[in-house]
Length: 223
Image (tube, rainbow, N blue to C red):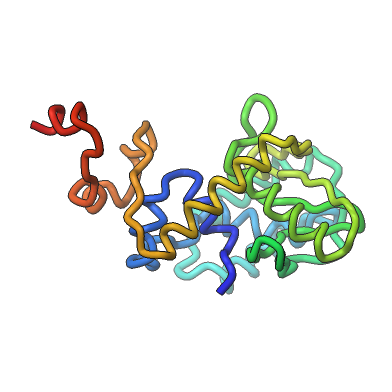
């Protein structure tokens, strides 16, 4: 089976998270803000009719309530300040035979694509995981159509459009993450990437018992 772009993104954050997610797929539900942004995305470049999108959310979000409508109104207020292009295709399935990966692109145009995000844009550029996602989609689209595609990330939480200019280092990050996914698929137990994100990781309690110290210094610290 080919590797999903979502697995590549998880591995780039922490390979251990991907390893544990494989046995707990239900732990990854769609965030509310993304669900709302995703529904708005089908209307970008056209009239942003709040009443119409509300009705769509009632169908697409289980137990849709006031919080979803509050987020919708907040995003629409920001999105109405921006001129958007209307996509040619939505949710396009893409793949690369060369790298054995596949994914689904939110919005595709004749020469570019857009990735939809429910949060606000960073002060500059795009977030690292969003940049990696753009690398994956660029690789797939260029292989499929034999021409270059440039990417954008659309942060509907702030009504911001950011272009992504890819560099050789971005592609090295992709290759590293892909190798980590392949290791997990072979059943190898990866080393976690420790950092601030550990405090918010839903797998924190499952992760620690699996971690093994690899050096004498690490063993001493464990004592």
